[in-house]
Structures are given as C-alpha cells and as structure tokens.
Image 1 (cartoon, rainbow, N blue to C red):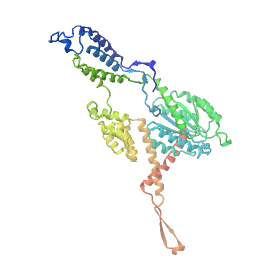
Image 2: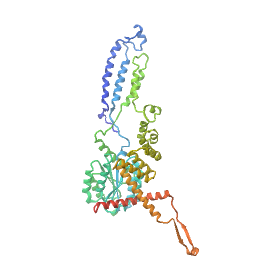
Image 3: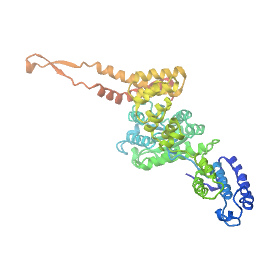
Image 4: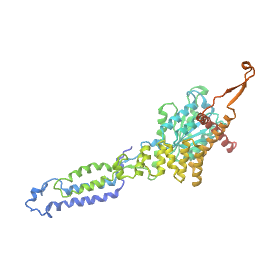
Length: 509
C-alpha cells in the first residue's frame, strides 16, 4: 500500500455539512449554561446539590459532548482517505502470455536438462505463483501459434505446456514479431495492462524492424524478453548481442533464466508495475482506502460519557450506535451477520476472501452458488447449480464443469447451448474448440489402440509341435487409457493445429 499524505481528501465530502450543525449545537451551550433548570419543577435552591455539574463549574457539558460526537460522525461518514487501496494479489491480477521459442537450438543442454525443458519448468512454476490469475501460452519458431488463451486453469496450462517440443512447428526461424502481434490480439480481449513474455535463446536480425513495429502497435501490452541458455560456450552458447537487439527493438527489459525464484520475482514484478501504470491511467481507476472507521473508537468512548447520571442529552449514545451500525460486518460474525446481511451478501464476502466452501453454503443465487462450488473444487455441486440456469453463463460453466468431470460430449453440448443464446461469444468459442480438438485427438488414439487385437495367436513349433497357443496381451483399464491418451493427444493435436494454420497462411508466416 502506498501512503501519500499530500493526497488527503474525503471520499464523500457532502457529509461535512454536519460540521456547521455541530458548531450550532456548541453555540447553544451558552443558553444551557445560563438556565440549567429552566424547565425543571425542582426548587432552584436545590438544583446546585442535585446536578452533577452546577452552574458555573468547569468541564464539558452534555451539549459539548453532543457537538463533538456530531462533528466526529460527520468526518467519519465523509470518508477521509490518504492511502491507496490496492489488493495484495495485484501481480496475480495482471494478465500474462508466455511465448516459448521452439527453435531447434532450444534442445541444447547447456541449461539442464535442456533449454526447452527449463523454459517449461519456469512456465509451470509461474502458473503456480500466479494461481487464480490468467496465463496464456504461445509457441513460435518460423511461425507463431496460440496454444492456449489466457486461463486460470493451471492443470490445463501445464498439460499443453508439457506437450511442447521442437518438432511441433515445421517452419524454421524465430517469428518474434508474429508472437508479439498474436499476443497483442489475444490480450486485447483481457483487462488492459497485459504482459507478453518471450522465452527464447536467440533472435532473427532481419525481423527487428517488424518487432519494433508490432511492439509499438501494442499500446497497452508490455513485452519482456528472458534469455534461456548460457553464454560463452561456442556454437552452443546463446547470442547475447542478438537478444539485446531484440529487447531494444521491442522496448523490453531483458532478463536471463537462472532457474531460481528470482526469475519468477522478476517476471511478476514487471507485470505488476505495468498493470498498475496502465490501470492508473484510466479514469476512476485509482481506489482509496476509507479511513473513517478509525473514528468509531473515539466515538465509542464519547458514548460512554453520554450515559452519566444527571446529563440531559443521554440520547446521544443512540446517535453513535446508529453511526457504528453502518460499519461492515465480517462474514464470520454469525448471528450478527445474519441480522445485518442477506445470505447472498455473506456469500459474496466469503467468496471475495477466498472462502469458497463457506460461500457456496451461504449463496442462494444459483449462479454464484455454482461459481463458489466450482472454485472450491466441488464440481458435482457446481454442476447441480449451473444446470438450473437457462442463461449463456450458466451453460458456459456447465461446459467447464463437465470438462473438469471428463464428460467431454456433455461439455460440447453445453457450449453449443451457450452459443445458441449468445452467438459468437469468444470464451465459449475458445473453450469449445479446445474440448472438441482434444476429444478428436483422443478418439483417433482410441482407434489406433483398437486396430491391434486384444489377443494374438502365435505358433510355437519347438515347444508344442505346431500346437496353436494364445499369448494374452495386457490390457489397460479405461482410466489408464484415458490418461495415456490425454498425455499423447495434446502433442498430436498441437502438431496438426500448427500445420493447418501454416497451410492456411500460405508460403509466408
């Protein structure tokens, strides 16, 4: 959090109109002091012995206390602020796309076990560090291809990341300009302030002008370049000069992959700073922390003095209670929360604090009940909630949940329903395409398995004199087949996808 006392201001300044009211009440003190027993039926000679504060004595009077409480309440309600309110997970909010170079040189082992494996390991750790944030994946060599749009599903991201290999793209080269242009198009659909990270061990000098042009065209996207490999090892070493030229052309910071936690800190710090700069440039993007609640404590102390015996303005405690009752209640306040917050409000607060199981129990709204159960990993409960919704969002999350439950045909049908309600909706189109291609690849793999018979008859003439003997072939369970297909299919799917995209583009990338 940044503290800037020079930026002190009030979030709701119209509440300051009560300050003149407080001044008026204090001014009325003179009338109360002059005639303390004006409306009393007690003999004036007895009043000095019955009043706690006799006329002329020093010290605060009830009207003083009331004026002070009104003034403090007005300032608290006005919302004094001087501290920016930024979430602690700001670096996880910033969208990020990682572009991995699949050139042949990425197979060198100067960074064990290989440069590509080191890059994939960094991508996996980065996704874990940014849990809950959206991270996308691009692969490029002589051409650039989108592997996965930004997603917060770390398991799906890791599945496709581990399928990357240097033989997935037939075209040779380093199309960094194409990767930047593709990243800019994908991030345009996300929140402003996205970052593109290039994990590469070299650059094409002929592409520097195109890299500079594409980087300048991506107004709100930041480019980072991280060198993968060691220098000073002859032909196997990386070209440090080419990488510096690439970073300069892209206007990007240049880092070196070390395999340690500093790599992740470097990436997340740059992503966070860029996201903050872009967000702050937008109107109304800066949020301030309301510090008015600190005045509740002095107001509570003032309320204690308001109940002293003999004080005429005892109802001032009600004013403090009314002001303090406006303070937010914690979602765990039990009976107090039930008294002041609806179940959906309690569920929303629990959801925002990451207590998804508790949020799912509170929510009555089916969409948010399903969202909470989905985030908590209770996919059957999420499916039950989403299935009762006849909306595009409901069917979309039915598809996501069915995918989690490995019911891919049902997921496709749900995405189709979402698109029938909301045609061309990009999230549904993208997710449906991923599931459809994955299902197709799995189907092709199953057909290949079925081409080999479960049993083979072989003739062993030496042992049985020509007698036919059946040799059983071990059969994998359905779960093992699915896991094996799921491991093999992404690579086959990506190879076919990249080849089809290259063919559609023509001779040049």
